[in-house]
Amino acid sequence: MDLYDYNTIKRILTRHGFTFSKALGQNFLIDPSVCPRMAAALEADDRTGVLEIGPGIGVLTKELSAVCGRVAAVELDRRLPDVLAETLADCPNVQVVSGDVLQMDLQALFADQFAGCDRLQVCANLPYYITTPVLMRLLESELPIERLVVMVQLEAAKRLCAPLGTRDCGAVSAAVEYYTQAEILFEVGRESFYPSPNVNSAVIALTRRQQPPVQVTDEGYFFRVVKGAFLQRRKTLANSLNAALGVPKAELTALFQSLGLSATVRAEQLTMPQMAALANALYEKKA
Ligand code: SAM
Image 1: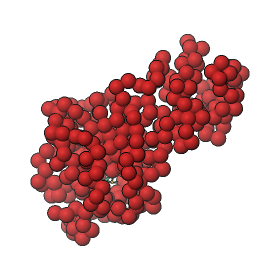
Image 2: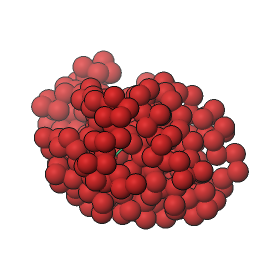
Image 3: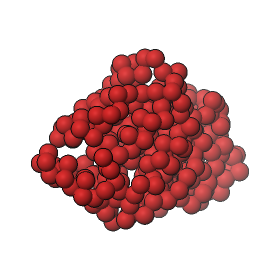
């Protein structure tokens, strides 16, 4: 069964009475070159368990099934498991799990699905409306996920992979940089999907670090500072942190000076070591 073929897709979906839901980010891949490249980028083996988010009709799932030991594919749309039972009939190492990846108990899911696996990875053509919350959930979960290969909107890919201190960075870039080494692998044009979205996409790889690149006194507080810093991008860092954390501006300006930062510096100008030094100094003052 050629799941990249428009007529095949249409025939299967019509038979199951399926219509595309824009709200669920349903843009299915029809370019046969993309899924094999994503599966290969995982560097998985037969002892690897792979979580897929949003299998759709199973085009990427099939490729994952061929390169790893076990695939758990979480799908929110309750109309799709019947379709997947047909399209993945020849993939015995795949389990489709119905549910919302944002609500699911991930620890329990991994324990249930990947009991015999030594390595855990994630691969997905992510529904774009939940890119950031899904990635944040996975990164903060403390699950031993060693590598994530995911497709996201091109703009989101640039933001996610931007190191702190560079133009495209934001609060989510800090979390990605703190937990992983990130790279954009390749771009994917909008014509590679059906229905075709309005924007282009990119596949990124996030490889979990053994150690964070900086030492922070309190991780929770570090991320509160990061979120506060980027809350109002147009404002100076002093104004943003004053609004977000209630630290007096005079105190912030004095602190900036001691860290060699200008009084008018903006959040996106701080590198990861500078952001960590700032958060640690603020934490010390608070304690
Ligand atoms: N993997 C397929 C492909 O590449 O052709 C489909 C990808 S499509 C961009 C996103 C998929 O995620 C859809 O199947 C959609 O129903 C599913 N989805 C949307 N929100 C979800 C959620 N919160 N949890 C799990 N799956 C979700």
